[in-house]
Amino acid sequence: MTVSLLLSGTLMHQLDAVGGSPVHLEPPRKAKNIVLMIGDGMGLAQVSTLFTYRSKEQVFKSFPVIGFQKTQSGDNLVTDSAAGATAMATGVKAPNHSIALDSQGAVLKTILEEAAEKGLSTGMVVTSSIVHATPAAFVAHSTTRYHYEQIAEYFPKSKLDFFIGGGKKYFNRREKDDRNLIYELKKSGFAVYDYFHSNLYNVYPSPTKRFAFFTADNQPLPAMQQREYLPYASEIAIDYLKKRSDKGFFLMIEGSQIDWACHSNQGKMLVSEMLDFEKAVAAVLKMAAQDGETLVIVTADHTTGGLGLNKGETGDKVKLEFTTNGHTASMVPVFAFGPGAELFRGVYENTEIYHKMRQCFGFE
Ligand code: MG
Ligand code: ZN
Image (cartoon, rainbow, N blue to C red; front, side, top):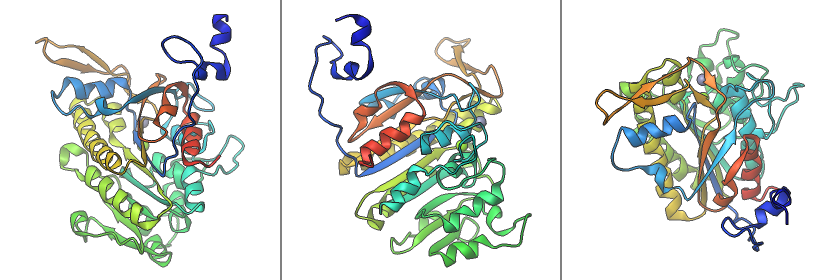
């Protein structure tokens, strides 16, 4: 066989990595639950900071499967977070700034919406406002990510069961109208809490009700200023979602501020956001390893800051240096663990994350 024939199409998937001889591939194991963890702006350089700034507990080493995704959007080689999240949530490359709408403005059904329709429980835990681009693309539909108040209107009418994140003001102190979406959330079955009146660590989310906890009025604090809820929130989300439905769950967890640290070219802030995200990854992996039926995917929407880990003065420490305040077009890593993880090996488009997740759920 010629090399080009060997490398073409599905045949490639039937070859083993070493000898190139055809092997019988088992269909991927079905995942009952999927946790999609997005480090916003988390390229390989961002992940590498964990290996250079700390000696132990390298959680990213525990993933048996690694892949790379190409991140360009529908209209730009350099994606923004809205189009990046839309690609993973819907399988379509939308123009930058678009929230789960295609280039013609047609509504794209998200993996979260489909999971909810099929009776799975669904949740999101983020360290930005809950109406920010990444979480928005899983439950809302908008031509622009910046219509935060319009995006908030999707939450009461969504099928989302559980969310933790900032952005309360877009629900109850709105500029565009007098609607009180906190009231509307409660009317549609949510138990609603916020950081001002309650401590997340003292609130027990009852699986008989939907659950919302606002961690900030607008954007939550950076991890450097004692924000530390992401790992704990991820744990209680999984615990809740398991009890909420016996059919399985879909959970999206975002380390939102990795991106912001890199936009502002702040190395120290980046390291603290990465350590926080890594703790959440560790917590999720532990639970997934225990139940054996949860697929965990850790990836990014794009890389930010054009980060270099350059040689430092002392030799034992690298110097974090940035080449831009914006995003870049590099591929981003995909780490997978659990049933179906093997599907995430290789190099593929960001939209494949959606198709692979559907395949693991058995939706196609
Ligand atoms: Mg984001
Ligand atoms: Zn960004």
